Image (cartoon, rainbow, N blue to C red; front, side, top):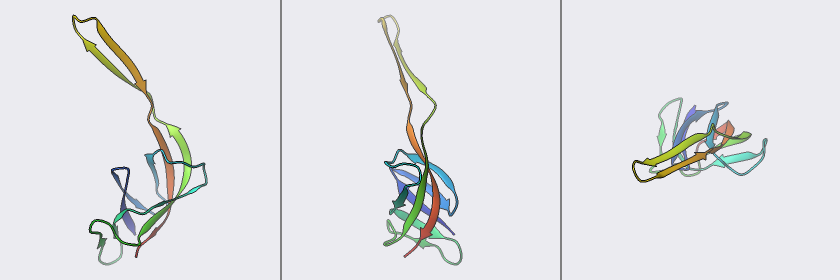
Length: 104
């Protein structure tokens, strides 16, 4: 059985036991998260498709890790204008483990 849910304008296809990275969520390792915007549940038999979401369906997950991605460098340059800008950015992420997919 798998589900497709939406979190922070990203869609994830998950099943029980999967590890995924989502945008930073509040909490410590071991805390439980519930994703309520489930778009599709499929597996045995006919899939259940939401319009746009499935009422009462949820994906339960456990926070495994909080981390920041590798640094990316943003560089701007305008020739002949003596303008140079160099910035770094590290995006924060949360790793979660999917515990259960519950459909309505």
